[in-house]
Amino acid sequence: MTAAAIIAIAIAALVVLFAVVLLTSARKSDVRGAGALSRETRKRDKDSLIDGPVVTGKDVERAAVAAREQSLVAAAPTVPTVWVAPDREEIGVSRRQFLNRATVTLMSAGLGTFAAAGFVAFLWPTAVPVFGGKVNVGKLNDILSSIRSNSGFFYSSSARSYLTVYPPEALPKAKGVANYKPLLDGLSQGLIAMYQKCPHLGCRVPQCPSSQWFECPCHGSQYNRVGEKKGGPAPRGMDHFAITISASGDVVIDTSTVFTGAPIGTNTTGQEAEGPHCITGGGHH
Ligand code: FES
Image (cartoon, rainbow, N blue to C red; front, side, top):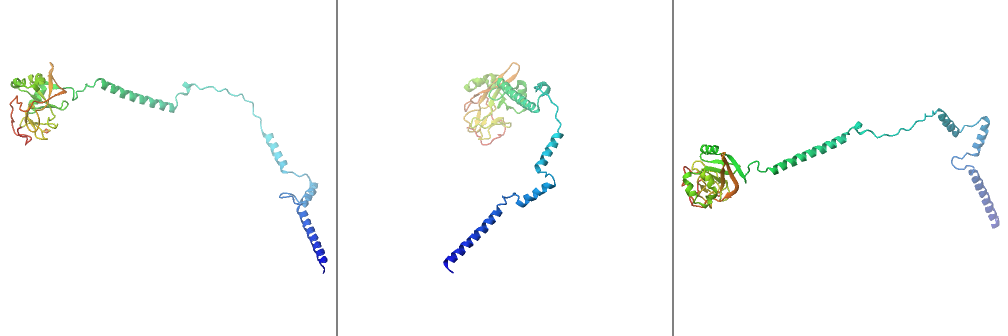
């Protein structure tokens, strides 16, 4: 077979193959995508028209809408109502308003009471006798009676002081002691007031009923019944406060000023220990 014959056969085969491909594509083009009807289907549809009218989905929807519109009843025309603000007295106070007002009222009342109490306390700071001012410790007769029943001593916690009897026969000597000058009014009326604080290092000095002295438990300082030093490390006698006795018999101790105790060696009363000491080791200095 010659080359020309082979070429002719090849060309013929190509032509046949091209024709087959062309026919196949043409048949597929009848289907125009998803949902498209084939020629046979369209033909069947045309044939069916012969049997009667076709009812489509749109026809069904239109019929349903028409039926709904026929069943609707037109509303009667209404006149708009004009809004009127409610009457405050009629609606009253809401719960929140009531709680807010109650809270504010109670807080204001509490603060007002607190301020009033502070104001009153500020205006009358000396209504209650306190240490640092004039302290009324009672009637003279009651105090003298208490001194007798309490082994010679009277104690006032509010005045932080002891009261004892100052013997009238010691008064001339007392007038010669410079430290006693501010005390002479009280001494002449038979009373002397001792500050409870020990002049050594500040301990409270208790009375000793057996010795009838004051005896300090801290370092053993001892003082006679009118506060004059008798022993121990204290640098002087017990400190004093001035006393006034009113016409009505009220005894007032003025604790605003502390008068320094008498120097060591002062002994206006000559009182020695009248019994056993409560504190040992004080000794005489
Ligand atoms: S404090 Fe009283 S003797 Fe020292």
